[in-house]
Length: 155
Image (cartoon, rainbow, N blue to C red; front, top):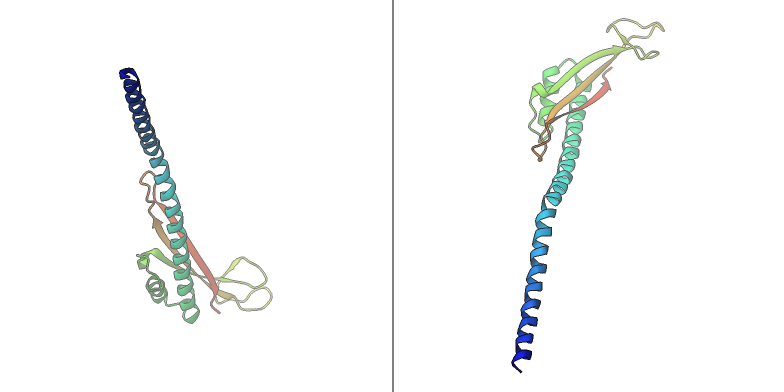
């Protein structure tokens, strides 16, 4: 009788230890997988943030281009309109405005105010470029400069 009681005690004890062993194994597996999960989720978050910043920069450049259509010579107004149109922390130094001229029959740059080979006047174009640094959440990766630009015909 005493032996069977002792045997039942040992069986219960071994079952309890096996249960604890399974819990410990799950904890170890979780500890090993946690860094992989965190890096994966952080990468997805970075991708979403980068797409959001790209869309915001493109929208800001478009707002500056719309201002350029009104007055292509007002470079500081175009820059300020671009900065004011977004929630990104842009400054006017992040926005560049370039005026160029082209002939309709060729895609090469021409001298503004002259006539083209076909007798038509040159066409004025304004390019608004927005540059902003993107900082990754994962500190191992270095910052990346993102550039968005819009070119519009202003005459």
